[in-house]
Length: 174
Ligand code: IMP
Image 1: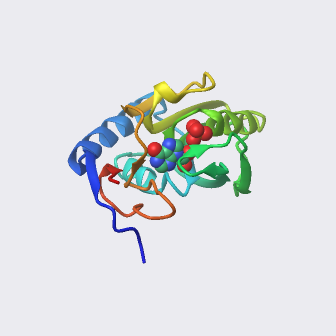
Image 2: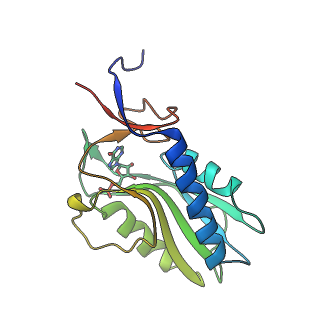
Image 3: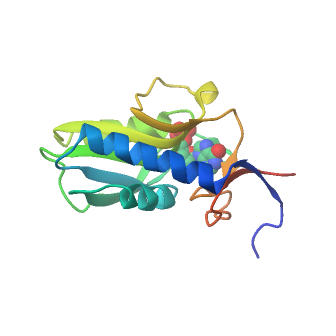
């Protein structure tokens, strides 16, 4: 039943909230008219819901689910599409909403397949980035926080499907 290990706070809920509000304002400023957000399940669900709450004006949403074939806490590099979008991206200003960019392999795969669908613009917003782990040079226009090489959980992020419900981001203790 769950995982009993304690979680040491890395980013408190109020810091996340303030930064997500700033990111929402920045994205809105860049796309004052139409904006179509594509969130990556499951990890981005909390980030997306807070992000859109801080956006006025027209916003539409869609969801994708990917499997990164994680081996423990590291990505294998193989990505599989589990759930595709419900609507086309043709001519839309699309912003991918992702929880974290680690090696960059998942996001590179996603950007490639979405770019092929003819959006007017394609940008990416990630709440977290671990640049020291990058294996491919992927472009992310909006980054919430840059963090060191820790495996983090909470605020949508999981370890073995646990901890997604935490309102803060932390590191699982041993
Ligand atoms: P990448 O392909 O290595 O960039 O990994 C991206 C995916 O791996 C993310 O969307 C997460 O689902 C997962 N991931 C990477 N680092 C972490 C972490 O620190 N905590 C939880 N999930 C992570």
